[in-house]
Length: 408
Image (cartoon, rainbow, N blue to C red; front, side, top):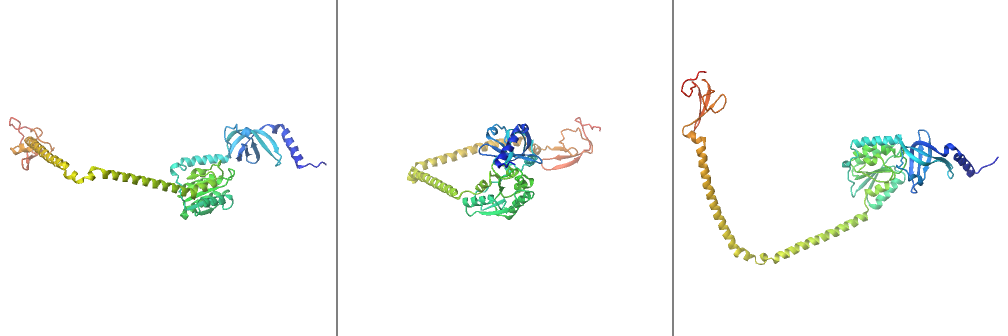
């Protein structure tokens, strides 16, 4: 019985797979997971369905021809061949073509929740709060273990020593993660004295980041009275929490840099402002000094008594007397005009007519001024307005113009 080396066994299996006509050129449909674009341009991912998965790779020469950007949760159709990666002894799909085939369940849920919260205005720019320039205390909602919290603490302390850091320890993946993250945000708000909150975790697959794609976490971020910086995964990862937050950071380390400035940079900026302020003050003082010197050189300051008591004083007196005379003439002219108009008005006044013995009769029934006897009947009441006072009368008889009684 022949004993094979691992290399011989792996090569044999590879030959079997590569010589299989079905596996040499086939289409496979599934959902992308753990998608990792490499710096080399290759794309590494897992293709899965409800019960199975297969590792896959698309080399740069093929990836550059894609018309879309593959990502976790996308349902795709992939054409390629199956072979063995000898170093790991594992078989995988080598993708040569890829095209979208709808979206996977998680991605569909992501899109549905995004549309719902967007319609509610949860992502509106007007709701975003400004991140404070110099926070005294920074709250962090993340796992208490791992490199993420250590990196953020080191960066904050290096950039701005003395900043208070409060950790709300939570689980960042799994069934309990959404509730814990939401409670962590609420507890930091209730604590008081926290100026900015960082919510996040390191990178991972769509499933591992799913806690930050839940409605519970998104609403807790939106309802936070303290500004929130979202720092979930790597730069290519994008979650619902990122859209609800006041500021999105590409990584947790970048979030720490956005939360606090570098102390040396602030000191340099203050020094620049100080220099500009001193220069501006010197320029303003120089302008005032030059203006004062110009005023002191003017004739008004050199000979003030002459300007007050000299020829200008005489001219001012003459102008004053002329003004007074013109005012008297104008007032006399307008006084005569006023008297003339008052006489005309008095001649046209009904009061003057009534003073000569005339009166005005008003029907008590209609309230109208009576100009003739038509419309009156015996027994009607009338009011007679005289030059001084009024009388109320009753109609005994209505006479026509020929002085004969009018039959009613």
